[in-house]
Image (cartoon, rainbow over all chains, first blue to last red; front, side, top):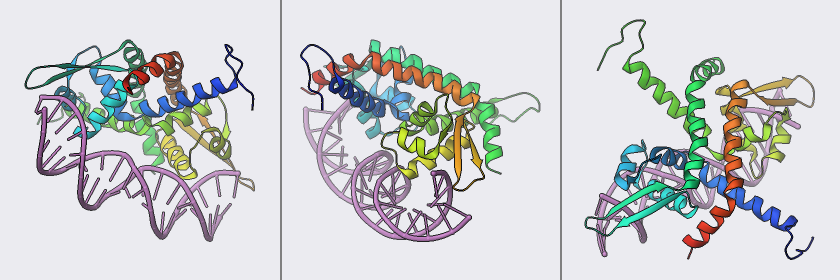
Length: 125
Length: 125
DNA sequence: CTGTATCCCCCGCGATACTG
DNA sequence: CAGTATCGCGGGGGATACAG
């Protein structure tokens, strides 16, 4: 195994970057994470608003994914020290950049809906 | 609830389209499906090649996702009647279109890797 | 080689209850 | 209102075996 030469990225660095990239990809490539990002969009949404906005998500899944997205620097969580608590979520610049590609997926879905529907009919017979 | 007027799309049609869209989105918005599409790319790959190419996927998950993708018209499965069997998978036009957006996600991941890494360090402390 | 089927375990996830 | 913790179950998914 090749050793690191200080100051020059080598195979070890690259593979570490790769494994991180795969990890991140696995994190965000799940429907709840993508739907949350898509739902926040350009807005600033409260926990309860997200709960209502993301169809079918449970309390637990929402918190869980919000933490994950915050950890990866895709959203920022601001707590207003009032009672009752008011917590708001917005996308970071990274989050907004990712959202653009998610928009692409959504557009794709709409665009190919008829194609998909007929493909399914063909397959199911 | 509004009734259909023949020949004009109405609320019922739209909500049916919406539910189909959500269903499709839930199907494809999972890491294995996306990785499979990304791996096939412009190529024509055999089952075993995909098994090797998609890091960490199990036999079962691979077949399962391949069927799902075929059903949704994203890939085409061609069986060569030889022994031993030779089955090849390629993207359809719809699949290639979706792949473009997945590429976007991959690019995003690489682009923001440093940002993510530092966000994680901050969060984990 | 590819695909289906069976078993079985683990953990994802929903439900619920409790704090601040 | 937002978040954490706990429990319990259901099914996702791995391992394995077998068929074509």
